[in-house]
Image (cartoon, rainbow, N blue to C red):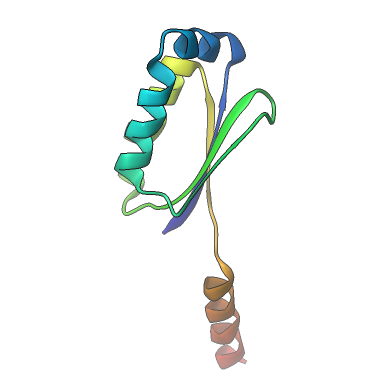
Amino acid sequence: MRMMMKARMDTQMSNQVTKGGAMPMSVRSTIERLKPEAAYFTPEGGRTMILVFDMQDTAQLPSIADPFFQEMGAEVTFEPVMNLDDLQKGLAALQKQS
């Protein structure tokens, strides 16, 4: 299932991780593991990373979110999302039901 993860990092904790040099390694590790179709970084509410990736199993949630909780005091949210193709497929299925 296509998921959007938003990790809004605590500024003080992420400052320490950034100054210590661990931030690039942590982000790179996450990107390599999840292979997102999109990755965005924004100052929304502090340092925020938004990834859109394919989640195979909800059991992945702890292993994905926990490093951000522990290392950066992040607030992490997950939301199922669709691209345009997914939306069109879903709308076509609705029309077939009518």
